[in-house]
Amino acid sequence: MPASDLSESPVNRQSPADGMAGELDRIRLAYAKRTNGSPYSLFEPAQMLAVQERERKLLRLLARFGSSIPLEEARILDVGCGTGFWIREFLRWGAQPKNICGVDLLPERIAQARTLCPSATTLLCQSATEIGRMDGAFDLILQSTVFTSILDPQMKQQIASEMLRLLSPAGLILWYDFHVGNPANREVRGVPRKEIARLFPKCEIHLERVTLAPPIGRRVARISHSLYATLTAVGLLNTHYMGIIKRV
Ligand SMILES: C[S@@+](CC[C@H](N)C(=O)[O-])C[C@H]1O[C@@H](n2cnc3c(N)ncnc32)[C@H](O)[C@@H]1O
Image 1 (cartoon, rainbow, N blue to C red):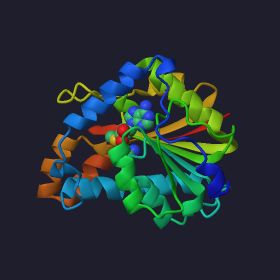
Image 2: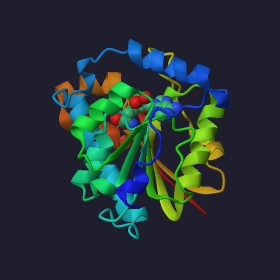
Image 3: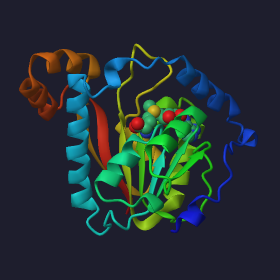
């Protein structure tokens, strides 16, 4: 899809009419309350190890399930792209900026993404409940820690349905999100395997447990990187799922 098609959508399009305005406001407020602490810095050993693990695992999943989708040509949608971290990862792996579209609710995140991503990338500030575009417009659709930010089941279902609508027939949905609750943050809720299966009916779902529980990971990574790697490989203390969802 050429960039001109990708950028036609109106900016800041949320639909109060969809009855979900309250949940969108709650999400905006929850993010406004967050502080930019250092846990997300790559100079924090646990964060660096978690990012490296995610990259290895996602590339392995793409090689296994997405061999028919060369990244150089893939049309990619990042749902809830934030500041464009994953968009820049895809560019590093060979994707073309003109083929990438990121959507996020928060204007400040989209503004930051615009400063960090190439100008040919399409970045839209709107709710992912109604993204627009033609059916089947994307070969790869990523969501990373977006569904756990949403507490309203109806909104999660609407976004999942929108992702399926936008997925090309042989396309893949890439999932990265936590499956357990976070007692320190009531504004997020883990999405377990059963819920993922309900959100994406008639799909083949392949999930792997990844990412050592952050409070444990932070301690372990400061002591020993190999212990961190061993615990992650065992998987019992991993809090996230990384996976592939595709139509059967
Ligand atoms: C934890 S951040 C993750 C950002 C990015 N995916 C990443 O992994 O770096 C979750 C993002 O989801 C966005 N988000 C939450 N609900 C959304 C919605 N209904 N529509 C679009 N974006 C949404 C938030 O604005 C936030 O930027």
